[in-house]
Image 1 (tube, helix red, strand yellow):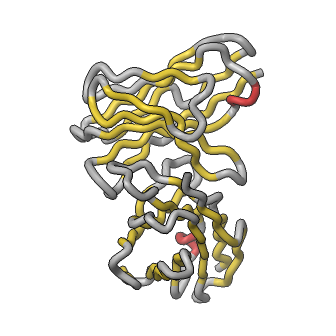
Image 2 (spheres, rainbow over the protein chains, first blue to last red):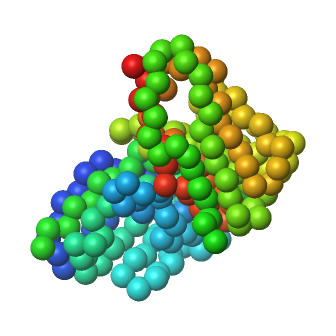
Length: 114
Length: 112
């Protein structure tokens, strides 16, 4: 089945800096790659996603890039703010699967220091 | 609209006890699923359902049972709890292929 590796496991930045989280996946047929943000005591929430026919997608301070050849995708957060502090998960949909049968990465704890 | 509602939020069990985690949604989604979250391991899929009367196993199904008699409800049953099932459990629903999942707030289970 699909395997998703996420790095780093923890990331500490100063407010205003950029943060980058990277994920690799194993199933070359995977075609949907979402990123979820989980705040303390809450369930994960989708923040951005990308499909395999797109190389990059931006939404204000957040961007995701996808390299299908290398089978990796990354989350970029610019001008970080303390409220960006949370756990971030990448995920991938195994090829040939309908609905949201996602395989998640291990998570990255992002801390933004004021 | 409540979205996805999980009960209970916290539960402590003794080894061998059984219990049911409840998940209810008012989003009219066909897809429902259960994940468990353990430190350093992300979220792992336990069971999922693509509609009433249809369920299937995920990555870590052993020790858990599910059924889907209505669109709204998807309970997760622990038949004989073990300490290895200590975890935070999340129910998630989705509207279709490759789309957003909506998560509940989680149920923290401790098995002694």
